[in-house]
Image (spheres, rainbow, N blue to C red):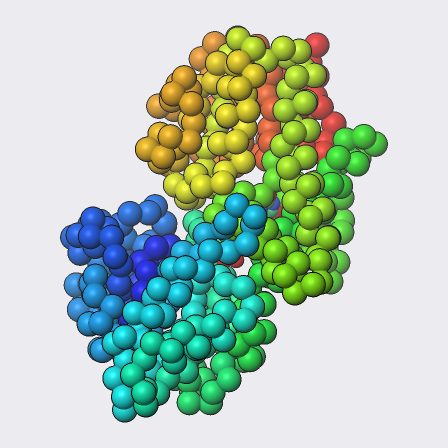
Length: 440
Ligand code: UDX
């Protein structure tokens, strides 16, 4: 089928490449000329495993194209996906102005007698589809035929290509059989179950899913505080509850809290949506509070061990919001580095993929030193903080690490290491929701 995707960010680019991979003809649109030039020459602006090969292969096969023109793309496509940003506003509600502008532009190029399906893939508040429909009707020529569909995206950064090629389910919200049949044809090659709903329900599913996942994380983090106060072990507790199929073990990993470009924004948006609908979702405010508190408790643990953080030499491993991505947006690791610097600590950081963007977007103070390796980062350090659970850190030679540190004190914010092994190696080891290991 002939498809276009307006917005070549994370969701747009990965979706476009995957649609092309299964045989569709895809035009990806973006209004950033620099990004377009890079994409056309095979340069991918994000680090996402498998994406570069996918893009290059499908560009070479002439199934994937890039343009700056919405008019050209809509003219050549039966189905038009919208995947533009929906950033948060200061009060947590969603800024829908990019969606509105794109809807107006689409309206301007629709031709009477040529049916088009307009699909919203961006994460939007419930009822956005109605507003997109009204906007297109208001700005289009009389007699144009179109339907608006909601098709939320559930990909995770770091495994986006795999998530898209083999989705657990595809959600299609449509109030029209004609549009639904085209959507089913697009997704047929992916051989995934298709959940068909009305437009409002599909929009709600996305916010409800992300909020539930964040709730699971905050539940585990709140439990970790109780484990610390009682001497229980969070890892055993979550294994114990997670093996009940009704609960499930996924997304119960206690740590420094959730971050990234989706969860913090989507939970705030869902709270704002519920407020606007006159049905306040106070449970989600607790989810946010627990998430904030988790990082605060961690820093308090550091103060308890180091007393004063000012002028302490601290190594931080990890800057990205999770492993296997170069994304440092809304990363708890970045917040932590800033908090430590504010308290006067001398921070040396290392991250396998995130250092460039952290510097480019000025997310960490200029005083933070960047190391070339995990080993270099701990040179002379009075403490090591593990903030993101990259595999590289799991495989590091801990004996060499201990030898390079001034004091063998480790704060593991992601429970990456085994406490007994750490003790055996002579570390003072503090982690999340498990007893501290002292070697004094
Ligand atoms: C998330 C959703 O998973 C995805 O379906 C949606 O489309 C976008 O938002 P993403 O933000 O890429 O995806 O990352 P995810 O793997 O979900 O992790 C989000 C955050 O939660 C990370 O900071 C991660 O460290 C944290 N997390 C995750 C935990 O702290 N504990 C867990 O058990 C799982």
